[in-house]
Length: 154
Image: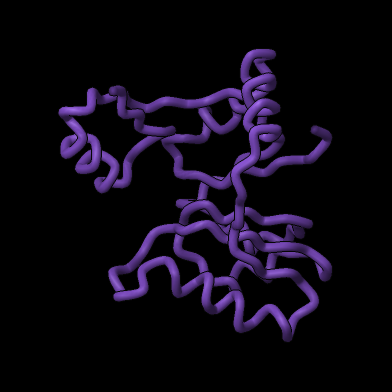
């Protein structure tokens, strides 16, 4: 869609992220994306533990940080604390710090289906579990070593 995409992942996922089409890949076990001097117009933090302040260092002056969950160090708010910090900080900085918000849209789902059918959107499925093995699937995900999505079949 015309964007230059940088993926940030662990060493074991470098090739997978490249195969999905990332223009550049950063191994977070060896390099901190926010400390390497690169600036981004958009950072989508799907996982990880970096604070909004840390991520802001890598944003352009009018960049946007979109937060969606992430790992937790066990505090009672879990990853929600990053979203709250971003909401508090956002009015005082030039960048937009927001949480991911979505709404149900048949048009969007149809567009995603079309992209998948055309081979333009690649999905990565790590493992598939039958419905009766949901506890095992949850346990596997909780270990934090998935490379893609875990699917439950009915």
